[in-house]
Length: 259
Image 1 (cartoon, rainbow, N blue to C red):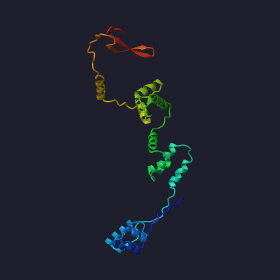
Image 2: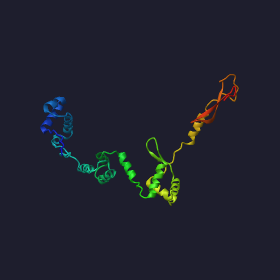
Image 3: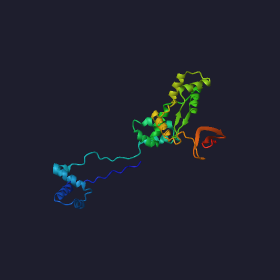
Image 4: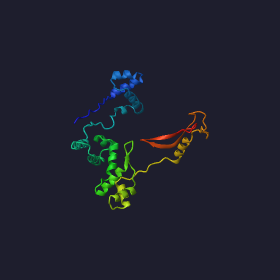
């Protein structure tokens, strides 16, 4: 265990303080006073002058206020106990980490414990959230998990979104010959955190704007399909004809009606 070095305080006698005060009152520079009396910081000279003017020489005789103790900066015993527990596990054991935090949380702050365990705060709160949902035990619960997992998808940011409601899951469980009520399925899905998330659709206002942008095209033909030369007017339709692996559009030439 290493002992921290105490900060050395340079104490000055009353004679030195009075000499510094009188020299400053005579108009001498602080740099000169520091050099002659070997004073470490010039702010002390200003402080002594202020004390002498308001409270006299008695204030200069007073000792330093407050406790001046040598503090041993050794390894915290709680940190030492935590390091000893972590040596027994070869990888990040979630249950062990949560037990350590719950054990010492009243004595040490959460931020300090997370720092000692070398885990992030987001990981800790994610573990807490996941520990609130129990794991499946029976065949019914395992089938419920499997159905909800198959009916989910992973978004671009890596999060899993569930899209099956409890009625669809209930019907699939009945197809697997499980006798269970729909409300019981809803209760189990809520217990295990398997409830589907509603897709947030944009308001109608955004769809109206999109339609306005699509209809913003100018009508150049004005129902006049007569053409004087080839390739003067080309018309197309939204009809698609399956051709091989792709779909083909219909383009009609207005001068001779050739498709």
